[in-house]
Image (cartoon, rainbow, N blue to C red; front, side):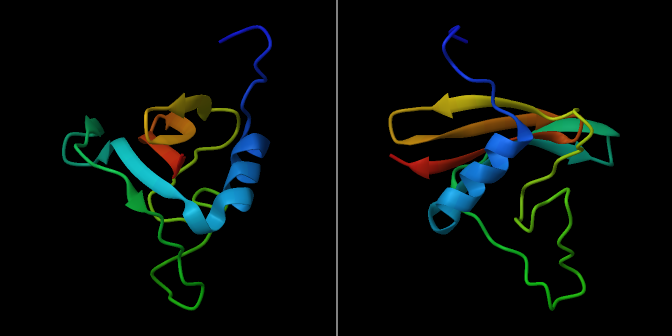
Length: 107
């Protein structure tokens, strides 16, 4: 990280979501697997972010998922954020004890 770059925080992450809500893409890098009681790598590509429907009982919107499928935050300062980009996308890489994912928009 360059000295002039600002640290990405949960507030920055939430702001990124608000500003890009209609164009968000998500790519899961790893997620928690109860069968092995640990985090496993996932081969995935960028997919459009699906927002949870608040009228559906099985799709609970909470502070841990911010209403977005594929997002999971543990909160309490235990989520790690960093800027991420490649040739076609730019966004935020998120990692925690439950896995990691990239939330991005097309360039």
